[in-house]
Amino acid sequence: MCDIRKIMSRLRKPPPEPVKTGDMEEESIRVKLSVRPSSKVCLFHAPKDLLPSFMKGDLKLMLDWAENECDSIIYWVRQGDDLKDITLHLEKQIKPSGRIWIVVQEEKTARKESAGETISQIQAEITEYTNLLKGKVVAIGGGTSALQFVLRKEAKEPEE
Image 1: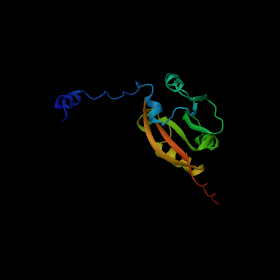
Image 2: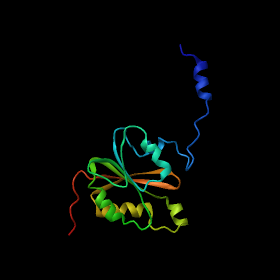
Image 3: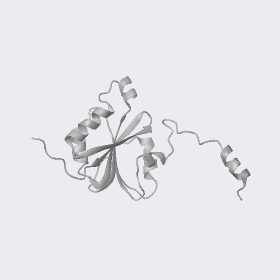
Image 4: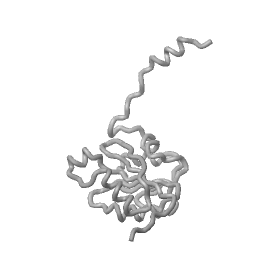
């Protein structure tokens, strides 16, 4: 028979506190961006306060450069970046099963700072000019979202 007291004591535990913007748990960004142990990960323009979460474990970590066969490339967009040119270069650096994450200011924050494009405009631009497909969008805290892109299984037909 089951012990009703044990079951009830589990139900009385308060739920864990939600992660506050800017106060993310160290591993949470790795989990949100599906970074697996033993992965080759390239970070471009990453905020210094997030670097410790990527330096733990057995990741092969590269900062501000990429080499062939990366499992994940995470690129924090800066004002004035040419995303078309950047993603054309980065798509050549990932494994067929790899991911490119483009980290941008969330639309509400971007409007306050009068920064350019919305998330949907960025996704449309990248998928139009590259061999990448858009994936999920993940809020990672601090007013930023990460846009996932993966390689198409079959190359995109060139438009004439």
